[in-house]
Image 1 (tube, rainbow, N blue to C red):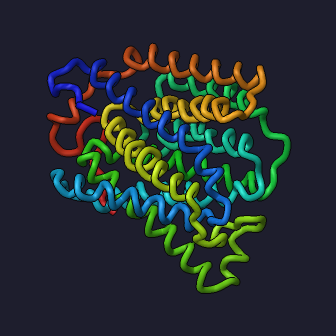
Image 2: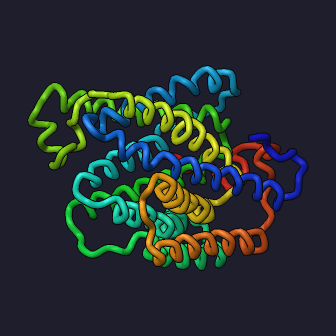
Length: 331
């Protein structure tokens, strides 16, 4: 994406950032069906390891040409560890909960992000973001049919929502300080390395695999039986769902606060539902209504956000930490 000129008005810069994040949500949503179909003969951890390794390798030549900045490795590792935890918990949870329940529980991050932002960043979310988050939660409930029970898989998936929310909050603090391609490359490499550790430990010790969940494909097992469909899914998710999507999200969070980011990323479940319709999956009238409510929540967040936020410096011209960021406290 071509960045807005440094001298562009703040609303213009925020809108370009919002478009980037919404685009990331669309990319995430288009890969959901591919990932679900790929986990046949391939374990979740092996799939994540190959997917994120390919994404990191493809992005590395571009990232290495970009300017470096102090602390990019440290900040990328912090954001990447949260992302790694989210993906591992989500895939483990999917061994015992249905896709719709997982989608609802994962996207509870729209509620968690404002709370984490208030606690960690001491940044009060705008009224528009809070109203949008509440409305989006209602929409997600309608879209997925709600939650009928709570077990181990539900707990793991809620934990995944906390981890993904932490990734958004960390990026909200550190993204303005670094080149987005370099920061994204570090995150992808961290997820790849962590997934390889889990997959390798399970392959070397069957006891580890049996302790990492149960079902057809526990987290650490399932093997590396990549058929043609799985290879296509790896390529598509590596490029579209990892390299492009996280590049857009990281770039967009240079201009958009975490609470608003969480709302915009709700383009993911809406896109996933539409892709499911194309592939023959059914969506009830209630689900369609939920998708509409989510879109209204996104519009509400967009209409109110520019008026709610005070002026802030341009991330491309400010010194030090950039827009929306504060220097890290010692220790």
